[in-house]
Amino acid sequence: MAATTTITDCHCHLAMLEDAEGKISRAGAAGIGRFVTSALDEGGLEASLSLAKRFPGKVLVTLGLDPDDPGEVAAFERRAKLIRKNAKDLCGIGEAGLDFMHNGDREAQRRAFSAMISLSSELALPLTVHSRSAGKYAVGQLISEGAGKVLMHAFDGRPYYALQGAKAGFLFSIPPSVVFSGQKQELVKALPIESIVLESDTPSLGPVRGEPNEPANIAFAVDKMCELRKIGKEELLAQVGLNVSKLYSP
Ligand SMILES: [Zn+2]
Image 1: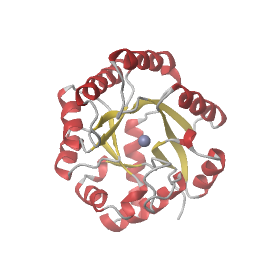
Image 2: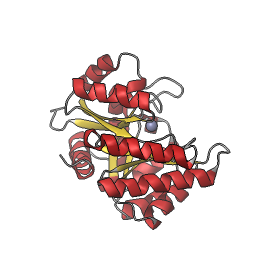
Image 3: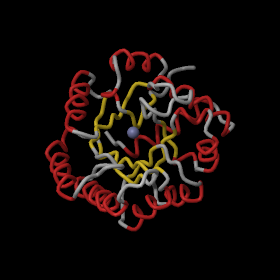
Image 4: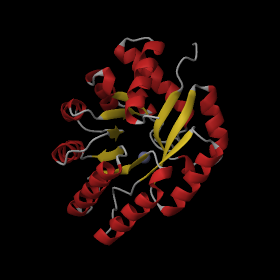
């Protein structure tokens, strides 16, 4: 394949990987040359910013908070402060969102999510949204609170709710687990191609259930998506590249 487009891994956690530099270079060989790495705590932020310094323009950083455990109001207000302080070094906010898989405090999650939605508008930074067993609620809250640039990462809800998000202009990033996940495959078939981008969510959501993931595996997602959409690789990657540029304008 002629390497016309550099693929962006729109959501990953490079700082959680062993030998992140080695994995960045393996990804590069597979055509994935840009990484939006997400930090969820101060240690992760420091490690991510130092990777960004070593790979300028290649590694971009977002900072959010654990959707499963956003903590008390004071905790996410502190996080908002940290995001504001580092805003010039961030390309976005996230991940943040709703995770209803466990029996957490849903109201606390909604409040924290709301704070991140308004911070994303205030700082004009795109928001990467985590929603697990809560797709309908996450899309609903984003729309009702007037969220702007939104990336729904690894959306696990029904196409019906995804399409509401797509209509509101949200992008959806598809992970390598699309290789085996019927739900992700339905999503790829249902969404307009203008709403689709790629992510690894490294170290999770790899192409082999239960095995650690790395950004190079996005290549498997690309092949699967071409098959599902009956579209050539070049055409898919050109469109995905265009979609990414709407989210992270240079
Ligand atoms: Zn993630």
